[in-house]
Length: 432
Image 1 (cartoon, rainbow, N blue to C red):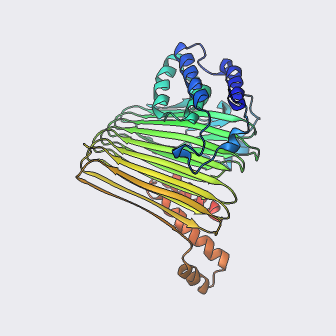
Image 2 (spheres, one colour):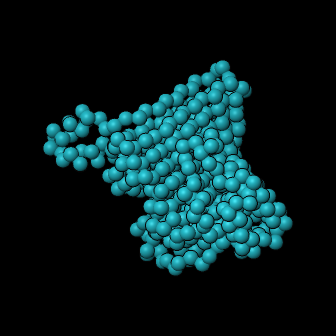
Image 3 (cartoon, helix red, strand yellow):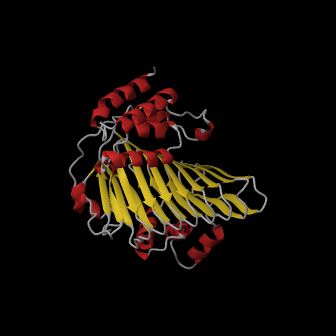
């Protein structure tokens, strides 16, 4: 057994008595099985095809603490200015992986919409939750580690026909270094229901730490979920996450991902269009500089006919920043009348910046309309010259062009309060 596995074995033995649902036999077996999978696989290396361009060797050497601990005390006043939706009626706040009920707010939600922390679920409810989280697991070493250690996260469940017009906020704050936070989120939309949820990850320390998350979204017939994820992690942080959405007939899943900071980020996003007339919109923006790396691996599975997907990811890369985009669209043999678009566009602001992009189509049906493409380029010199000729300073003109490139990714966000908040955030971070 390697020193790394020995360390996490000790952490598992130390953490297990502190984890929720310890008395539920189903959870004991589930955690032990997950730990065994991780112990057998270990951390992935660049020899693995899915991790060819993304090394986690530096993370592996950190030997982080995984047991839940008492977080630093914070008040809402210290977080309000940093929250993207400070006035959200539904708000869950977690500090260093621990739920903070005094900073949260869930009493103003409409009837039929429930929101809370995973640790507050009963043992009976937790077994259903286990099934949802298993759905979101993609059987990687990191999802196995998550299943072994998961202690906290958010859940939102909407009953049939319930529609929440205002966005919900799930805020994760990291204040301590040398720790690993294993988080899980479960979102359920019953028939005809709809809600929007924003996950914001905020790093308030420059010490290294890990956020390892798994998210599951389940959409019944005619349901709609808009999921917005914002990574504003610390400068030396690691953010590894898996998201899976399973969609039934005529459902709509909108996914927007914004990776704005952090030493290394990896997001595996999968949408499964399981029944006819389902639709998914998947959009993202990654911004890297210095020696940062952001990696997005996406999969859209057209498993049923008459479904649509629209995917667009953009990157802004400066200095020696690196990015990876690997997007796959798979059309099953019976998925006739599929309509699918995929694109990846990258703006390089430095000769040292680098992106590896690989859009893919796997089509096993003959009556489909599918397209994909990727671009890698620099700022348009003619546009830059035009703005400067109109009296704008060179840096101001440059910033405006970067903003225009980035803000286009907000297409599809219909709620004005959410769109305005995201536009304000992206304008602040566009000045790379």
